[in-house]
Amino acid sequence: QKEVEQNSGPLSVPEGAIASLNCTYSDRGSQSFFWYRQYSGKSPELIMFIYSNGDKEDGRFTAQLNKASQYVSLLIRDSQPSDSATYLCAVGMGSGNFNKFYFGSGTKLNVKP
Amino acid sequence: EPEVTQTPSHQVTQMGQEVILRCVPISNHLYFYWYRQILGQKVEFLVSFYNNEISEKSEIFDDQFSVERPDGSNFTLKIRSTKLEDSAMYFCASSEARGQETQYFGPGTRLLVL
Image (tube, rainbow over all chains, first blue to last red; front, top):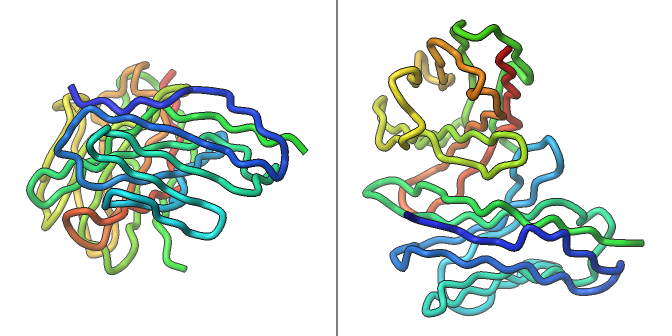
C-alpha cells in the first residue's frame, strides 16, 4: 500500500513567522514530489515541485527532499494570513508513461494576524 | 495563463441516474487525469488517459465509470448509475508530458447524489 502521511494540524503560526509542513511517503520508488495549496471547497493549486534531494527555493517557499528518509517538507517564510489553507503533499509514482499522484490528507495552516 | 476548466461546477442527481462531468484540459497537454475528493478526505486518483485510451485506473474506477475524449478538446467522466457514495468533488487534471510532469487541476465539479 502506497501511503503519503501528513500531520492534519491545525498548525498555527503568527504572521511573519516560518511555517514548517512535513510529509513522509512509503514508496522508495517515488520520483517526484509536489506541494499544493487547497482553500476550502476549491481545487489544489500548485505551489512547487521538487525532484532531487536537497532544498529548492521559490520566493517565500522552500521545499526540502530527503529520499533516504522518505521525507519532504515545505517551509513558508514570512507567513501571511492569506497563506491560511490546507497544504497537500502529492507524491508522483510513475508507471510507464504516467505519474499517478498519491496525496496526503493535508495539513491545515492557520496564520494569525 | 492557460487553465483546466470543468463543467458543471455543481451537479445534483438522483441515485441510479447517469452523470457526465466535463473537462477541457490545457490545450497543449496530452495526459489527462480524474481525481475525486470525498468531503473531509484525501484527493484520490481515479484514472489516467493518453492517446485515446486509459493508461491506468484505480480500484475505485469500476465498471460504473468510463472516460472519453469525444473531440479534440473535451475530456469526460461518466458515472452510469450513481450511488450515494459517489458524492464528492471530482477534479480533472492535465499534464504536458509524461514522467515527472506537474499536473494542473481544474476547479472541480461538486457532485451530490440524493
